[in-house]
Length: 256
Image 1 (tube, rainbow, N blue to C red):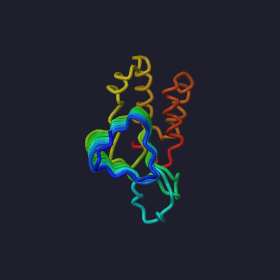
Image 2 (image 1 turned 120 degrees about the vertical axis):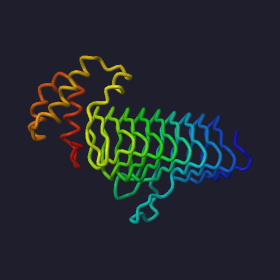
Image 3 (image 1 turned 180 degrees about the vertical axis):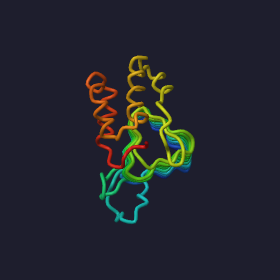
Image 4 (image 1 turned 135 degrees about the vertical axis):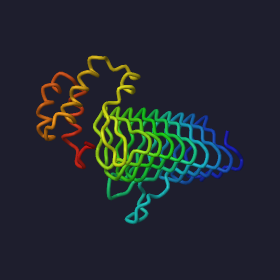
């Protein structure tokens, strides 16, 4: 299942039932989990850890050194979980010692062609990144996020769970959970109701989140006042409390 033209370093660790295509290069200190399929002309450098049952398509470059002038050759890592689909031409860089020291992708993510994940990014589970999405360094993307094609996210931003960005959104602030944003710079345009509906959110929960959204974005309250207004809802609804916690911890401020 390993093509004879593939170049695999003797220090790489390859699991069982791994398929590696023609002219792919696997460097030292790369670990690839069982059942992973790697297409032709892929380059993976280490230290990189890749889990089980991933699919990595042609011309992707994973685990290369970070595009950061402060990087001095430290053994930082790229960590990829299980059952991810990584399409053509994706570039994922390792972390830096100035931050967390790793770039990490969770499980069951669908990452389309030409996506770039810069150093020290953290991506959760069950996300969708459409073509040409780019994350600058130190970005955090939580579970079940959908990023539209050509979305660009500035350094140190965070995207909350179940959020959505439309085509060509340029994000310079944090995006709270469940919120849809669009534009340059990205502004809120309601809740990601379609995504929540697909994931089985009840009508009651969605109505409560609509009420929370109106308090944050349409009540003409200062953000601190909006959070105080949301507090009773948060006591009874975990989803609203997730929004409160996210906004309270935001260091960049939220898209508003």
